Length: 610
Image 1 (tube, rainbow, N blue to C red):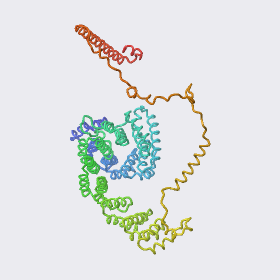
Image 2: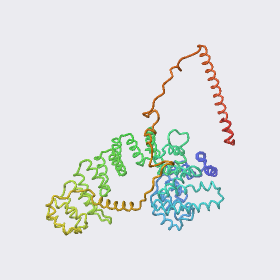
Image 3: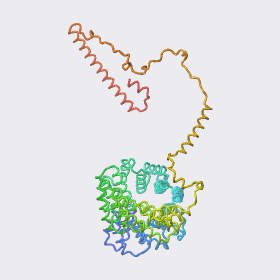
């Protein structure tokens, strides 16, 4: 029975294997490990872990547990099992170990792990591929590209030695091709990435998961361009015979939750761009059950509301969930602030940003909050934001200190809103601590409104401007003042320069004799041409319409002769109609023949049509 179960598993008949295990309860053999593996293959992950609880922690059981945890998204627990298995001699353990580290967000530990295992990244094309993925996670895209090219070369050599067919080699190396296109996309080589994705999809020589990733990345690369084509491409990876969009079952098993979530999110965004609101609402309603631990369904729901011009409802929805999910409130509050700012609700936008404590001191946040509060008319609130940021940076022990930037902007803000004394204190502090020329100029300008003596004392620190020593300021103030001519000197210089150029051109220019028509005497040109010669005859002043001949309307001869002429004319018309219908039918026959025999020449087709 054990042999039968293993054979069914090897043949991918998982349902039959499970039913065989259930019918073998009378045997004393422990089928729990095989049962857990079958449940894992069916993506019944909780039941699989439950079946393994009574199993002893041998290497095989621990390896299966780590794979179950990897698929369920519990990456840290998965990595712990791999760390325990390092001493056991399991083939290709390092490949799964590196994959687990990358999925757990610990890509920086990959090289250290390989060193401890005494394994080179290029020992196999699978390990080279996984290591390249870790480099991409660390934004080392050029190094990742080089390692992916090496992985592809090693894979081609290895699989060729194993006598794989060309199509099978391409299918095996499809993940490398897709990842290489992704890295090129991140490097900004969009044309190369676009071509690679298109080629993979067109040739359809890839495993299901690689094909799905290529489709998703191509859709993301195209963006809102050609939305209908993108929706058709996504339809190729959905479950067949399903009216609503749902990923194929094999993709549910093979893709990570993050990958599946990205595909569904892109589908919703495309539906919004295509203005298919009913389908978008229906799909968004199903996403919370698929991804219960993610905020993406909530953000997409808010996007649908914004698209329906219901920004107020979107703000309310995001605010409620920000309170329910405090550990995930940051991205929700940022989205709420974005929606409110776009809808011209500055109070709500500023309130949302103010609820995120760890970004309050950042220059971008400070600038945004000040702008929002200014728009809302809350000048005191904007000043308080600047004062709070200055206080934080005064106590901050960081190398990249932004205190001077914040103080400069705060002083300019207060000067702009008539708070010269506060601005003067800030500029004075900047001059003492940083010695900034801009701050010194600001200090002199603001102190002139508050304390003239201080302004004069600081004004002496400014460097004298060259060319002003001979100017008598007192006599200059007594004059009525010169009239301001905008850019006068500039225009004078340009005019002078232009005159010089014109003189040069005049010197170089050579007179040419005019060319006349043949036989034309310029001394005796004759009468001038008619100025109306270009007008139609009917519009010329000299035009006289012809008189109609009244006698043409008189009918002569007997009435019967007229009837006979009409009858003859009708017969002629009938015969012409029959001729034209014959011509039409013969033409149609010629077209049919031409379509059925593609080898006929163009001249023969023309003759048959004639």
